[in-house]
Amino acid sequence: MIGPKLFFALVVASITLPVVARAEPAAITAPSFADLESSFAVSGALTQATAALSLSLAPATPLATAQTRLTQAGARCWPDHHKPDLVKCLYHQYDLSDGAADDIRWMVALHSYGELLHDFTVTREVDRHGGA
Image 1 (cartoon, rainbow, N blue to C red):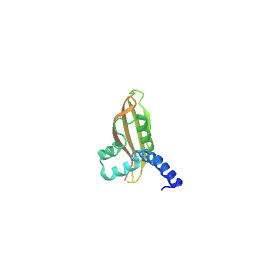
Image 2: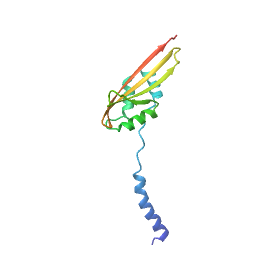
Image 3: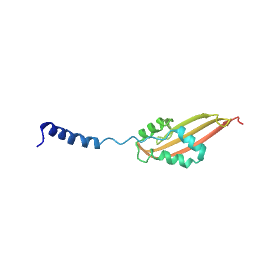
Image 4: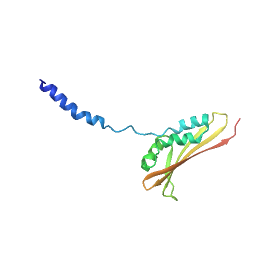
């Protein structure tokens, strides 16, 4: 025979366990642009950076969520006033590691359909100033 305390504990556990099982999934974050730049310096492949970003910028992601993820990764985002379906996100890094002064810019263009992300493009540009 079950005592009242054990019965109460079983009832509480049966009520709370399903709640724990329905916990929110972990937030999907974009890789930091500093990490993308470090990887790019080794591989030189923009396609790898695009693939890494695509994990957090899937089609139909709410546009505001995509912008938040890129902002958390180190970019600054703003809407294109001439194209309402476009948001630009820029990450800028100043680098002296190879003896030259480099301005490195990653631009992610978010193309939307209404309030949802349709797709995105990634570009990387480097302006060298002086050097060894």
